[in-house]
Image (tube, rainbow, N blue to C red):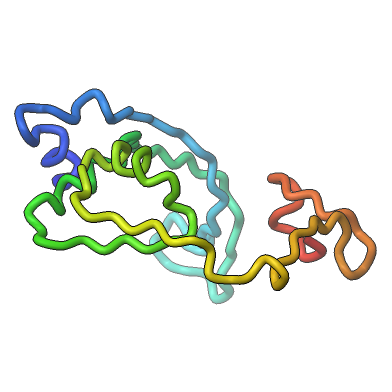
Length: 140
């Protein structure tokens, strides 16, 4: 919480508009021990019962990557490597930094050694549907 507040008030609240606040209420199932008697004694055998419990969370979502990257402004050198940073000018503007030295190399794997294909079905013949319902199932 203190880190987020630090970013919110940094540089005269420069990044204030880059945050969104979200209040979320979810229902969680927890196991509760119901073996405690009103007299204060406990039954010999524990009685675990599932109960629905509301969980409220306050979230601060930062929508600008330049906020976190601003902490590196004092660094003498920053090396970023990835196969997906192109084009560099848009990546540089998203981070809010002008990189004085940049190297964008060509692909190092020859084209004859690359293969692009989509897989629609898994080994057991089931369709691979990457949605919320299927992503947590064993078959997926």
